[in-house]
Length: 414
Image (cartoon, rainbow, N blue to C red):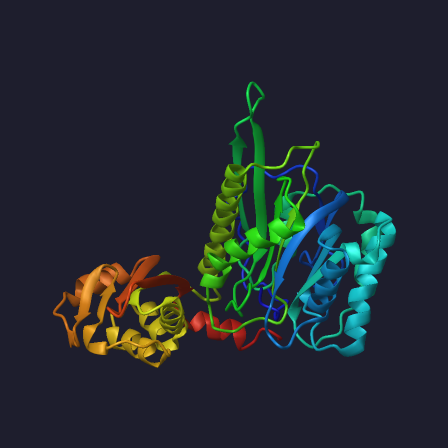
């Protein structure tokens, strides 16, 4: 995600390697000159048109690659041959020149692959408002169509302020009919994001790949379910990016019969797990973050109220700084829920910090402050709130807010 910084603030650590990847996808990744030296370009190609689904940012300010890829997916009816991603430059708010740059990348890629330009998706991440030198990308592409780099190389090339790669995969076997052997399927992906994270559709950049034989329409439905349970449930700083994109591309191997309903359900489960794992990795790598926080809201009147309360708590700078200081300041949690727009009676609310009850029925509860600090002074903590207004519940994943976030974002252009 963040569509801002070309600077990686510390050496990029390796992510837990995804053990299996679906076959057929070719990755080419490395440095083309947008950044000073770090990897900044990714090309993903398929041997033939593959089914594709995607979701994009809902920010009214949308980068040129977002608008172009939206149009291409509509024109190609969910069939793509290539994906080109650059990091270090968002190509956002760059006027007609930015639109030409995005198109130039797509057209050049299409010529190299002998396909239509609308079969190419483009994505960018980096600093907003800086003209993109598309010539650096197009000059690199011809040699890259023959390269065979690894998924790890691909995951590294899309990073900006990230300190680590984000990768995940799941594989499973579908039982064959009669005496036919079972068929193995896989879904895998990588993502980037560290700051400017707050989903109102999808957040950051995320690219998912699978070998299941599903149509673009079915992929789109599955992707939306997975996104709602993962990338829609994370926030680092409450800022929705201009360049957010999550895509899912399916490239079956040898001709395979359509999945049975049980197979589609298993794919959905695997996709949900991969998306959720990537989403959690993004929050854990939040800019300056030291703690991963789960906010759980129960007892809301309806799903919308549960979401309002959870999102307000997860985004509150006061709550996030309290967690940074291992301070069980329940008043900040209750106040955030109170201004969230959710309807409830504060005198019926219960609050827990890291499993310790701290507030009930309008009054503070006696608790061991030292024990509470010890529990909150852990890499992962939980804040739980029961509104006692209904049966709806939800969660958000967030992180604490430290001085590190200010240092990174106070100087990311210098």
